[in-house]
Image (tube, rainbow, N blue to C red):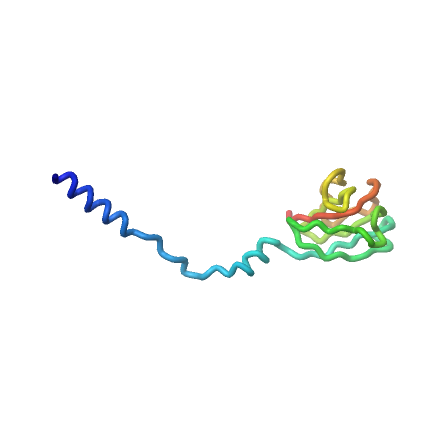
Length: 124
């Protein structure tokens, strides 16, 4: 009988312990934007040595930027990438399939890869 009483008292004590709420409320909209990471500008050029360029804005880590409809579609010859980042250019418009591999900042002045149609960038 004593064992049952002690067990019930212990179970009641454990059951009354609850996790304290977070001191700061979580704003899911802000949290989602933070998960997208940095917004950077990359210059993509249809000629070597950063000639005939367009600028594209892209969120790092998750966004795939399609070059479809741009003057550099299937004709990427050089790129400029901000310090602290790297980008990968892809043959498809969906950032899959064959790619250039990572191109580190500051970029590449003479890309000899085939038809490049999309880009995805990452923070180093």
